[in-house]
Amino acid sequence: MKPLYSALALSMLAFTACVDDESYDDWSAPQHNANIAEDQLTGVSFSAKEVEAINFKSFTENDTVVTIFTHSVAVDAKADSVKTTAYKVILGNSAEELDAPDGKIPVEVLQAAIEADYGKAPVQRDLAATVVAYTYFTTGSVARSTANITIKATLTAPEIEEAYYYCGALNGWSTTDKTYKFTRADESISVYDDPIFTCTIPAYFEEDKETGESVRTDNWFKIAPESAYNLENFWDGKLLGSTVDGDENLEISLVNEGANAIKRPATDEALSYKITLNMMEYTMTIEPISYTEWIYVPGNGQGWKPDSAPALHSPKNDGHYTGYAIIDGEFKFTKERNWNGGEYNGDSFTTYAEGFENSKPGEGGNIKCTAAAGIYWLDVNVAEGVLNATLISSFGLIGPATPGGWDSDTDMEYDEATNTYTWTGDLGAGEFKFRANDGWDINLGGSLDDLSQNGSNIAIAEAGNYTIVLTPLITTEGGKMTATVTKN
Image (cartoon, rainbow, N blue to C red):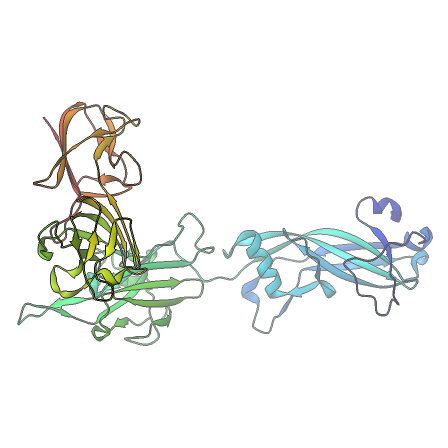
């Protein structure tokens, strides 16, 4: 048998208790005794053995503990003073010693350790662990020894797909018309580490066949996992829904067997809904939203005409709008292209950009700009009562296709009659973007017929002389920020 003192160099330390060994329980920090006789300890041999792979699917609600190792302590005649042995375990990357009587620990403790090191995916994991044995002697001494094991375990988690889609009245129960896809905050990480999917959908309106008017209608829908959505007929897949047909609750437990359609009734008057799926819990929450997708900026700068006023967009229908508008003195925001659908005025904001103020506090008056008139980039958060504004002093081209490359802007000319920016000159083959005020805070890119803030670079395939016209204001229903690039 291996002498204890050679084993000490690897894993065993000798300790002694300061209290009666009947009450001693300070296993994590036993005290050293320099007077332990060598012939008392050399007969102790400790071993731990890992168990077969553990599958959490086999557990029932009554299974509160799980065996993660078996163990033994052998004692020869020279070590007959051994009284008892207690076991602890160190799991994964933790440094904490956990109680493990008879090699057992709580199921929830093992689950938490695996999730901490690997996440929640239901695949087999190899979790490194260290078994710690405290051997107690009748003399009051304690010996600590360790053994390394690997715990093979597979967590139980619901199947979570990479994507989910709304299917219902809004898109005619079709996968080919109006796609409403749920997204995650960080799609680069596992769906088991971030199982939260969100999508904002508008309220549903149908045309009245007799009057031709658009009428608010009940919005029925189900949720299609990607596997079903990609089928030729998504009804052949397993859709998610409620156990109750026409469930109108804002918090719903989802099922994929016998799933019934969910309903948002026309009577709730919300303009849109933020739907959140927690696919680890298989739950859905629905948040009715009263914000419109667009607001409009009538004012001195354009003749106080909502039907032709510049539009600001809120892609998430969350009350946060951005876009360009002509500001010259006073203005308001309307929720529709008329004066009947409601407005945001001076009392709607508590925080203003420098040079902007509430003209008549407490009276619902206009918003007043005391700064220079011109085209402004507006960043308006009506949900938080914040209005930010940046005067556009210039728009320019920048990028390797332009004369200044990435180093300097090639300025465009502003046409006040059309509210456009124009430039004519030579471009090389390459890329460019539109940039305001010689800085990157405000820049446009992406598709020429649908430009966006921070959009991708725009490609010029062939060198030549070009005329470029930028139209940043949106003044028509369903309009976009656009540009044209014409080779002369």
